[in-house]
Length: 476
Image (cartoon, helix red, strand yellow):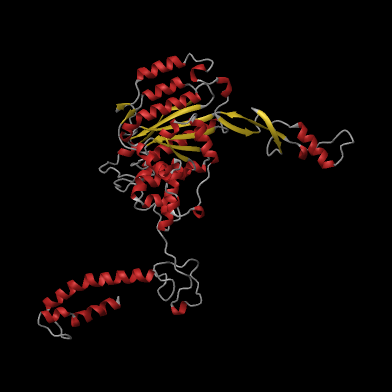
């Protein structure tokens, strides 16, 4: 402050403007000249101070290193403090873009009143998606299926469900044994006897005494039922993609009907999400739920994930052993945040901040997760980078993150305008621990569910140290 005041008075006496108005240098000028000198001095000193601060904060040592940081710890005196020297190298703290000003994928609508977020979306209002007469006829035909021939698979071969698993439960075929880690379901006799012999080292003396430490239990391999939650976007931006949604749902029905897989429907638009159908094995009920859906309004994607999480928590209270699988079918362009993150009169909306938070909540709850993008424009990324959809987006995000010096690919997505508008599916899948898929690519697969479950289980993420120069990834 003293430097600014001193330089101001110096400027008053030595300003070249004084000479233009008839005053000599080092002579006190008249009032009108002082006013002109002040008007010129203020923006000039403002720019100089900002430039000085910018240069000083980049210094790694010296009296001004770390000028804009707070030293960690208990602020105890250290060697060098008496001279004003920094004892730690200065590392600037980059603000997180996930909670920063770029926490939106597309512009949120303005002019919404405070009552908007407390109103439930009206699923029955808007443009019709499915032909109810065709759904009714399809339900009548499918109700006659008894052997599975109508769906090109024998029902008995998948009567337990679509998910291949192994465990100590009593279903499937035994494949191996293991030491029990809780209550024993089924004892593996051969392994138990061999463990007792190995402990005593003597197989000649009978009877062989078996202790609890010798017990081994069977491990079974089989199929267990899934609890599939279909989260369907029925906002106005999906109007041109509903034909792909219809085909996708028909394929899923063909792979789950006749098994013990349970399917539920959650639709979202306007101000929130609604559970249209609770998980059930009766596809006639699901058809009736699909017949209610109408297209209209905005895209509250974060609230849809929250509703799916609540549904799974409720199902786990009924049966803690269920295998949940959330499939989000959308164009992934949210513009509405969670209701609880918006206060009265608040005009700053953060839909992506809420979206990342709810996605990470799903990951923490160990819920299988798949983001299915129906936007046809997204097919250019796999064609350009010659990789599957999710891996192409991850590669592009990590290359941009390394270029900009960012640590997290999610921050790279939020920092680049084009990425932020088109990487919505990857953003949800990356935060939720799942994978992003293109609907058109899934339709080419022999089994959609098998593809989703297999890629979610076996694929690994890219690592920054494995990246090469960008030219190595471009098609030759």
